[in-house]
Length: 82
Image 1 (spheres, rainbow, N blue to C red):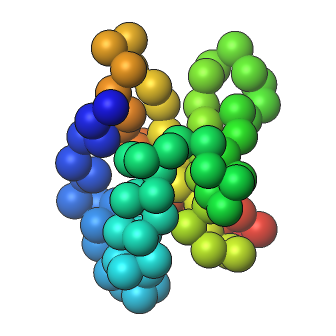
Image 2 (cartoon, one colour; image 1 turned 90 degrees about the horizontal axis):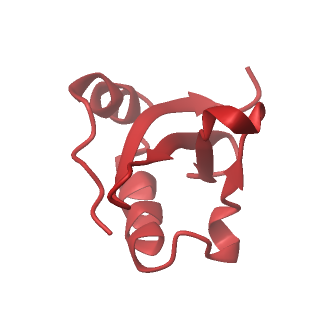
Image 3 (tube, one colour; image 1 turned 60 degrees about the vertical axis):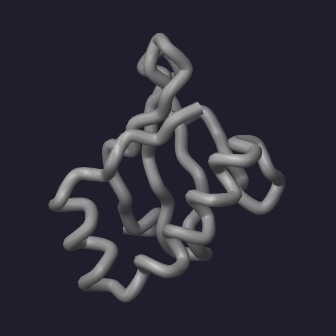
């Protein structure tokens, strides 16, 4: 499985909030096992859109999609509680 490079706006968001190291750590875990218990990977509602998320830390989550070839594209990072 390959994770596409994240968009520059997502990188800015992560850097502004001091999340790059946490994101990189979780991304490495995700690459070895997308359903590792520490990631709390879940299919978001409505399920028909096939948007998934994994935990970066207690507050922030990465939103992603599985491409048809099995690769992953991270499409957003957001504050889970906003």
